[in-house]
Length: 134
Image (cartoon, rainbow, N blue to C red):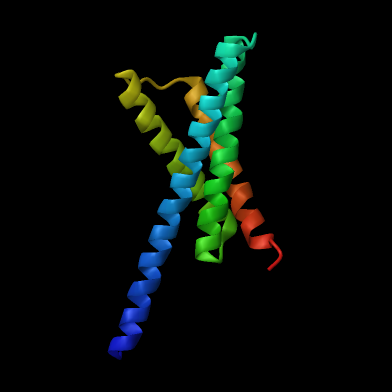
């Protein structure tokens, strides 16, 4: 193999990895924006705290879909697989961050529901990435 061919392959792998990291960063940025908005709504309006789990689930779905879309667009094939993988990675990272923030880790039914929603939304985002008009 020629040196130029090797450099091209290494360059592609690095840019795909960076693209995937950017997809996860965008997903977490969306999560932060949604939760900051939710906090402002809780503070300045009559929104009850009982709505927070629903908002968290919707936030998970939107963020995982964005991550799935980005990952599948980076890979340019197997959108459902890469989208679901991005959703799974998003859910695991979110669990890790939440356990660090709260100081303890406990498996609960809501955690499983967030994981399933993240997988499904990530897969949907990946499928959308494959079916977008070019």
